[in-house]
Image 1 (tube, rainbow, N blue to C red):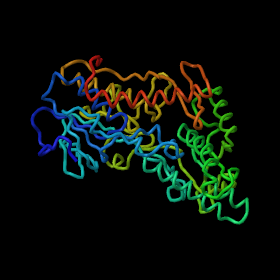
Image 2 (image 1 turned 90 degrees about the vertical axis):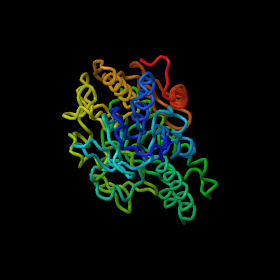
Image 3 (image 1 turned 45 degrees about the horizontal axis):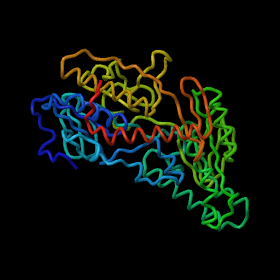
Image 4 (image 1 turned 30 degrees about the vertical axis):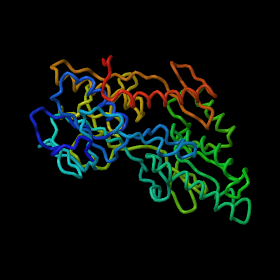
Length: 411
């Protein structure tokens, strides 16, 4: 699908075309901010490529998986966000021809003068036997729909079971991974499943949620105060949290831990990590931990200055902390901002800007009305944190719906 109805998107018109691969947080932000900056350079061709004709609000997926938000509500149509000058092509990205500067897609090669790789990531099963086959993932709106459907089906199956113990086992959802996504999903399900149990012929005390984390704590990297607040809310909701619980294998019976324990349930969801898309591994680009692409301080691929990377796919080391920045939406948005500025700088002959991450804080919803937040080193928990999470999601939606590639105060 080409929203500009271009006759041949791979044709070089001599304007050094800029191609953005991926319409996630980073890719969409590059497209919006770049077209705002290039409004005085109408000859520069900008193309955005994605398999979907919508942008997914990934941070809201736990709500879809917990039955409190419709999947279509987190699919934001690109048609209503992009500037008219952005050519959008709906197709699958299959690979790269680095020598010829061609992005290989399902509709044919697309030539780039500058390429932005913002292809996101995919669930990382860490080669745990049976995990990919036994668990549901939570990376797209469709994934989230499947999780909620599976949870409801599990309640129906539990209601038909002959004894309470079997009912509890079948009505238990096990979430692997104690990061922000896992915590948010566990909280949503712990509140919603008892509410809907009756409609499936099951007592409200039968459903359960377990959160399994391989590390010593949930929400790793957060302050102990924030972690304690999150654990307290999860405990109030009845979530059983298991830490230092490394999964050795996923079997038909459940998660088999390294210490031999078996974690049983009716539904298993994996939210334990991300890695780069498979096509990047064979691309010839330099990659690091989890297949993420190595970049310089301007977010250009090492030894490939014509290619920028932003979002989950970029392996960006924070010089202050000394580790690679995590795959978070706020990181992706800031990287997208830097890439847009640098592309504009190349067009206008200005110096490039090094990327610097400015941490705006950390907010996680825990259930349908509470959450935890760490803003400027101050940890808080409860309803205020949940309101803050809602406000952040609302503000993001407003920004992408109304920017449309034009910003009178573009910096």
